[in-house]
Length: 336
Image 1 (cartoon, rainbow, N blue to C red):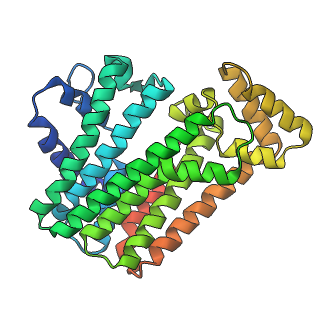
Image 2 (cartoon, rainbow, N blue to C red):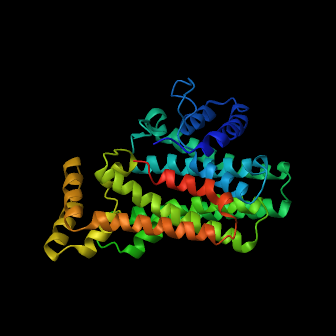
Image 3 (cartoon, rainbow, N blue to C red):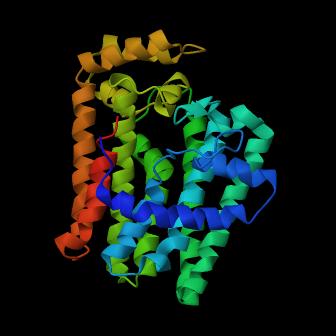
């Protein structure tokens, strides 16, 4: 699927801001950051197809929807993407993920210890970038508010990651527990991206909250969509690795509700294995589909997407101003 035209319009500005922030630092540590962002390969050679910077794009489009100049929101957009990449680096170390975006992960190339340094540096750079809002003409009180909201989102994400890791061996995961973890792991930063974009543009308190809630619901939809793709659409990126690490995704949670007692015991038996292997994932996928969990999971994706759209509409902005943001959401939810 071709990216929406709005991405072609905003990507050069985002790339320029990232390069300005990173290329002024000569230490090799920052080449690792550029690798994580997709700008270069492990040898430092420029890449021509960097990953989609969807957190940065969401922040920038939220700000533009409210009439802000793109340059005003660039420090916030850059900060959100750097924060997201910091989380990715650390999560890949924790999960032992060898590849992401069809190439080796940072820890696989440079080792876990240096990957932790790279992740920590990305987090620090995110806060430094956000502080640069003052140079873009954003009032000091708003800059401090943005910093506090970013820190709160990162803290919520760490809490969700802790809960997720602590529950790896549990088999009795409820939909409520799943939703809380995913809202922290995927929704917190995406919600923060939209709310910071709105704050920078001078939105009302009600509009900021609507943007935040829209991002959180979209985060839920994106995670569930990724889990469906990993199981049934041949996507062997991180969600597949999550399954091998006993991640209890939405299809599993819904299967527990829909399955007969015998099928529930069969699912539990697979997850109680010491190590899961690819044939186990295929077995789980077949069981999930047999009990109707695949269809139910897709229904949940559509429900959460609709809720995100309703929250965007609740901002009271004209449809044409929200259209690029909705187009981005639709594009992300159509990717396999």
